[in-house]
Length: 265
Image (tube, rainbow, N blue to C red; front, side, top):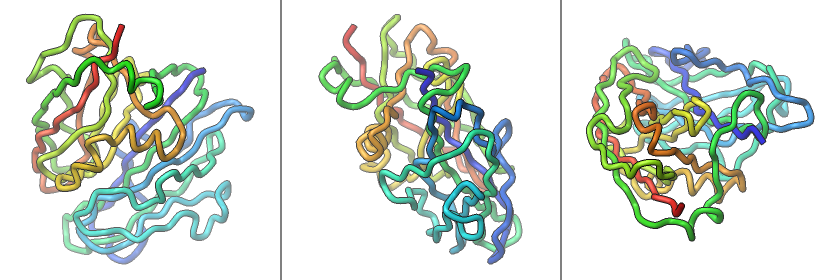
């Protein structure tokens, strides 16, 4: 099956108390990707990186209602899930949900909303996504990779570099599962993409303090949703495995520690 998972991010500058439609990060869209009606897709996580108390809303006529939709209160400087663990809001192909955020009214402040869509069979994509139960007994050892991401100040994803740009300790032609990560500085989201993900971005919130949340982020998603959410990359493609993050106007540069598990051949 053509499994796929995609992290999405949009932002608004100084929206204040009014829910304001987000500007999507470059190359991304609020539109659900096209898939057969007989297959399924779901929104499985939502969070924000906020500088003022506000709301984060995703709504569509395909949801329970198109007035409130999923409308959750945000937290200041707490990039962690705001949606219930195990959430699976069904999505319809080519639907275009309205995504809006409110928060700080300070000039220049960028408020960012992030979410993850999962597809059980997306045409043209065949991501290597696994369950924890499938890999936990196949782990030979753990590998740590670090990247200092030089972010921009315009919002959205930036600072992209190859996963092996700073530390290259990969074993040739071996499979590695991304279990989680840690950040030294808050950002809205950390993202990986490459052949193992069908070149779609996968990722999670950039909480710099809640390391027990992010350290096994993809395992947590799998256990909460029952969906295969643990990405697997092969070392042969290490130079094309890319990492970046979504950051606000402050442009702080996080050191991201990616936690990989080397899988038995």
